[in-house]
Length: 624
Image (tube, rainbow, N blue to C red; front, side, top):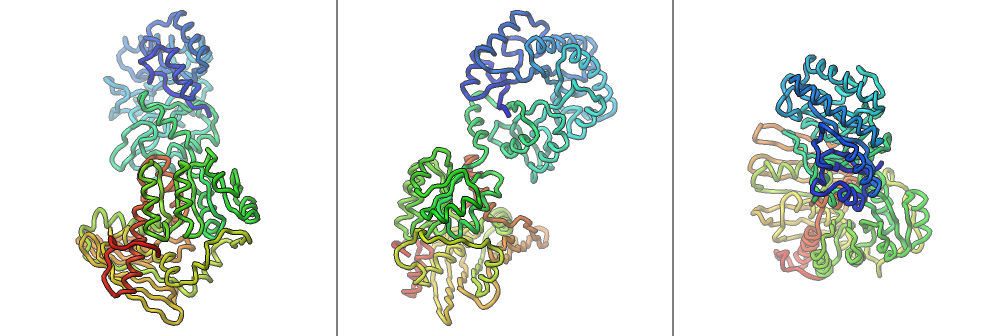
């Protein structure tokens, strides 16, 4: 597909200057409007001098004209105005033929006689349909005489406002001189706000055989209304739309609905269709989660894999087929096509690898825990604070649809929290389950490992690996933790921490971390609030099952339970990370500040167990 733009966006310049600007910005085609040569959009006269000027400008700039705007109210009721429209439209179509432009865009009009881009209550009546047919009869006669094809665009305010309307018109007239101008922003409605891409896919499937020109316009769609905004500033899934469109269409895609000052950002946004990710590490977490999640994601590309173990690297290359493989991390970071890195290596290497990536200008998703000491995490934070890079910690449970629903209720409806309980209890039967659902993990002989045996100190190993989940979920739902008092019991190879945590907003929580319980996986939370309560049961993460969350709302005295059909929170984590980078918007993923706060909480628990005292998180430092 060839990306283009409305020429009318550049009215402050003469036509040739405008086209040279467009070419310099990386575009090579336009939807032309006669306003760019000082005429009305539907001119009463187009001289040969004007035609020559347009030809010269396009030839000198190397920018072609994909389509000419020829819109007017096809439902004009004033006979004098109707006659004038007919003559002016004839001028535009003849000019298109003289310029060898194959398409002229038209509107299907409105019975609103003051503004045909505004709705009218009778636009969807048979009277309106009949008036449209009458106008199209003479419009198509002009088009056929000049061997030019007319393209109409469904618009919410016009007679043709839906994909169904468009199909009806095309099938009624059944002529090669009438085709479709497809614009996703015009075919979604407020009722589609929860599944915009689904609506776009549906209409593309229905209309794909008739599309001659495509538009790219953005909008912010809510349950109440649609607000058109500059490209990249709304919530339409434009990149996904273009990916879907490209499956059946290879023509011009014309941007519009933006000002000249917005063009640079819009192009940058659209050209980053997918986030190119390089994954550092071919170990278990990458094999079981990251590689597959990136491949499945809607907005990321597994561009590169890096590992010092060449055997393991080549095995992963054969399975996941990245664009590049590297044995040298610095070489991967030097690749300009790598936008971001996922760090899936030993905890002791997290911070240094993240620092290297940030210094190379790459966004980072680093596995939890963020690091193993407060000081190294603070150094990373200071480095990132001087950039506009996104660094996210891999607490994927934030993307569990059940936990997301709980968070929404807590933040917006629950009111004050009076109490919270959360528990994370790994199971003695966990490995039986995970071995059945994870891919067969491939090992190498030259994998980079930290000095000593990090698993030798079970108390520390379990806290880093599992406590990081418990504390992040508790903080995500309840806010900042101020202090902890903890007890640790060790018997028959099991470790049990009971923790009393004081939260910043003025309540106390009870937290339970037990590794491993003699029962099934046992994880969840209860939150009691001013206007309701939440109870959640979370499953072994490798089953990719959304948490069962039951929300009681005092507002309607009813329980509410989300189905959460898509529980692939590892993939959702990747997509959330990519969205935050590509759209320059904050995401829900854990930040460096969150990762640092979790480290402080785990260190405070360790200190409290040793001393028997209440430990304030602000007082801790050192290594875990």
